[in-house]
Length: 327
Ligand SMILES: [Zn+2]
Ligand SMILES: [Zn+2]
Image (cartoon, rainbow, N blue to C red; front, side, top):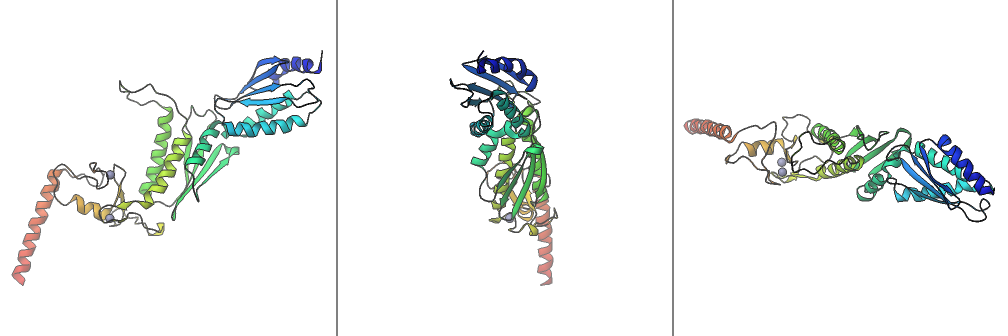
C-alpha cells in the first residue's frame, strides 16, 4: 500500500472518533471530503486533493460552507495551508481537519460572518465601531452621531440563528425615552426573526426563521444616526440639544423631546400647543408624515379638545373684560 492509501485507511477509521461532529463523505485517492457540523450555521466542508508526489507536496485544500462567508473561508484556507506545511513529507489531512474544528470552536462568530461583513460594508461609517469578541461570542457595536453615543453588546448564542441574539445596552447618552425605545424595539426585531407572529393572517407568507444579528445592528445604527439630526417641525429647530448634557429630563419640561407613534419628534411645548389649538376635527396630524398623532401624554378626543379650547377662550374673554374694565 502506498503512503496515501495508508493515510486514507487511517482517516476512515479515526476521523469520526477524533474530529467531533464530523462525517467522512468521500475518502478515495481522487478526493477526501469531510463535513464538520457543530451546529447548522457552524459548519464547514473540507476537501482535499493530492498530487502524485504527495505527501512531499502539499495537499490541495478547499473549504465550503452554507453559511460561513467566502471571505472568511479564503482566509481560513491560507491558514490551513500553513498548518499542512508543518507536516510536509508526512500525512497532512488529519492535522488540517483538527485545525478547522478548533477554528470553529474558537471563533463562534463564524456563524454570522456574512452578517458581520454586511454590517461593516453598509452601515459602519466614520467613528462607528464594530468589535468582535470571539471569547464571549459577542460583538460590541459603538455608534456615534455628533456628541450622542450608543454602545451595545450583542451576544450570539450557540444555537444561532434558531435562537435570537442577546441585546444589552452598555452606554447610551440619549434621552431615556429613546434609550427605552432602542432596547425594546431591537429586542422585538430579534424576536420576530425567530418567532412566527402570534396571529397569522390567511394571506401572510409562511414564516421563515431569519438570522437576527444584522437586522438588530442595522436598526440601532440607523436610529442613532437619525434622531440627533431630526427637526421639530413646529418650531423648525433641532429636537435634540447639541450637547447631551442639556437634555431636558423632566417629562413636563418645555424642551422635553416627545417621540410620537409614527416615530417623529417634537418638543413637549410645541406639541402641546399644537394639540390644544383648533381645528380639532379629524384629529391632529404629524407635520412630517401626516399620520394621526398618538401619544400617551395627549389622549384628547377631538370633542374634549374642542370643549377645553372653548372653555379656555371663555376664560380669556372674561379676563379681557376685567382688563378692559380696569383700564
Ligand atoms: Zn419645537
Ligand atoms: Zn410622523
